[in-house]
Length: 271
Image (cartoon, rainbow, N blue to C red; front, top):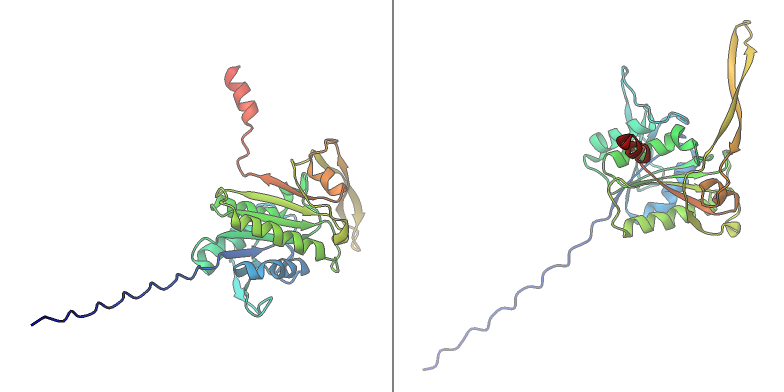
């Protein structure tokens, strides 16, 4: 008598793995309610899981300042958009990045985006900028980052062109295997989108403010000083951020937190 063989059960097909969305930390220096940060979120919200941690008030010109000697407070607030977790911080832009990683995300995000700043952060401005210091802090923590600035200080600035380039550059960053300390300083001319010619990879121009302090008296007769100045570009090369912006290109300058002057170091070693 022949023994009937039992048909083998087909192995279940493995379920396709759902690719997790990248986590994108968004911050700025103009404050969590600034139009610029809302436009940044709008530009990238479809590209990953967006979490916003930003100052509760304007922090322009704070550079890489951190808060010491006083408490830091972090409050979850009404989201900028329905599905975007949003936190307000009493500290500086750099504080925001540090707290976001340690107390909000409990991990390092895949990308950190800072901005969109109201006003230029080209040339020497990168040193003073809270927008760029937040991006640099992320890079110090091995998080690739970019700071975005629109050359328009007005509260009602038109961010249409800026949003498009923020999206394009962020998409490119997410698709590229970036070095973990990558920092991009992106500046966008304040022109209608039709006049934007594309972007250029640039060097930082040697340009600075020729500063002056106006001396005045307050109503009580006490002296005070008001900083003014005129922006002067000493660099006439055509590969700088200032040149690109003057010619309606979006400028992208790769920057770094290592301030070592390697050329001078080599000279000193030989002397």
